Image 1 (tube, one colour):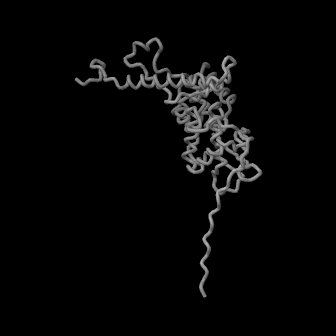
Image 2 (cartoon, one colour):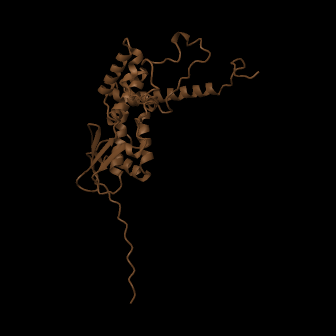
Image 3 (cartoon, helix red, strand yellow):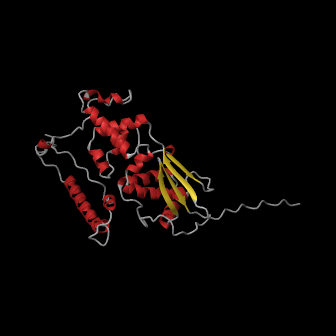
Length: 308
């Protein structure tokens, strides 16, 4: 009697999402999903922690409007995503909050750089923010899987499904317009952060400014001295300096998120991005070309770089 061969298991067919016209409209329909450098960092972090296949399906879901809602609630983001079932799936996205001691170290480091809080108040994420958090032995952007807290009610067994990935992409678009969202997900809102900075600056300007860092944890021995901004060069000495400080330009693609936050202009039929975006890009490209040309110029013989 011949033994029957076991039938090969059929792979489950991929399910198709139920189309909907009630979803959140994504600004991105092709190419890069976000515009600001800090939102790009968010997407880059996801690309390191999530498989490419899941990310690709997540982008498709986000651009197709399958994400029905995205709401922020006390340090987390809640979303509803229309999948292949009638009932939308519930998605929760959060970041591991920094400890109070870590935030105190961050605020202390920020208080030494008054230009950075000023950028945040203007709605821009300072490019030196990574350096500040590194000094505080912390990280603003997620760099490890344990920094992300992700959950979806779908039956998919993987930790990060396409519904979570779609929500993460739309979250990146929200970061374009509100960089403080990342701070809130890490445990400090704008008001709390600014209040902490006021306390630090106030302590540093008092009679005992030299001991203002005593409020930090004992292991911060490298953070000593009065809390004041260190200027690399006095303004009056700028033109007389042997080598002026280097001015770093932003990336190739200018950040247009501030224009989006300004909203529509009544004198124009279209938004500011449509009219001023090409100008920003042209000026940025010309400035970058000028700086590259300056860097490529050979050093003169009397600049002190030649060896005798």
